[in-house]
Length: 97
Image (cartoon, rainbow, N blue to C red):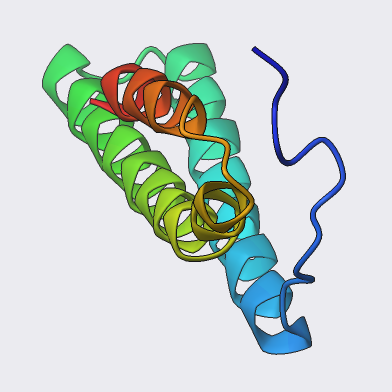
């Protein structure tokens, strides 16, 4: 099955891109912080809490991108007669859980 969004037909708004990048920058900062915590031999519980926070933030970003994918790419492909896109969407949902 060919992916519908190798190049996105409906562009993301500048605001959406800005928000997603801002979230990714925060996650990047969290990961750097976790690395420092390891270097400092910090308590395991503290490190695990930060890992959970970073995972949660990534999940949130993924869900936002998935919602946009469903509202744009998937809808466009269904309207174009490509029912196979539903299976691709289900695969993506499984990967994000």
